[in-house]
Amino acid sequence: KKGLVKADWNTRLPDNAVPYTSNVVFLVRKGNLKHIQDWGDLAKDGVQIVLANPKTTGNGRYAFLGAYGYGLKVNNGDEGKTKDFVAALLKNTPVFENGGRAATTTFSQRHIG
Image 1 (cartoon, rainbow, N blue to C red):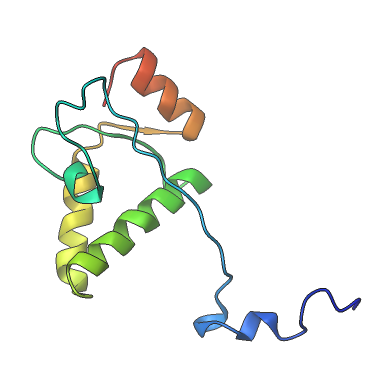
Image 2 (image 1 turned 45 degrees about the vertical axis):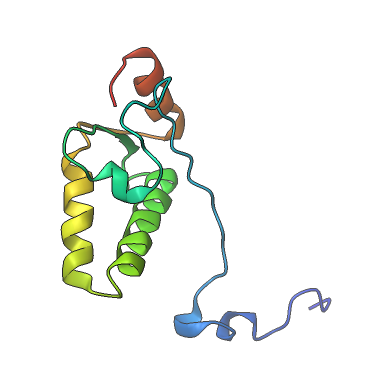
C-alpha cells in the first residue's frame, strides 16, 4: 500500500513464482580425495553424502531443487534423465538429517558422508 512493492509483483514470473536465491555448500573431507566439484560428482559410485531431509526441511528442499535444476540443465531438460540423476544422488545418501546443522554435525562428528 505504501508503494514499496508493485501490486502485481507475483505476476512478473511464470506460474506466479516467487524470486528467491539460495546457496548450497559442498563440505568435503580434507584433501577432497573424491574430487567433489559439482552436483554430478555427488551421484557417482563410491560417494556418500549427508543431506537435510527435503521432505521436512527448507535446507533439504532447496538442496534437492538445486540438484534437480542441475540435472535438467546438464540433460537439456530431459526429465527422465534428470530423475535418474537425482535417484543416483539420493541412493548415495545414507542419512537424511532434520536440518542443515544436523547434517553438518553428522558429517563432521559422526564421519558419515
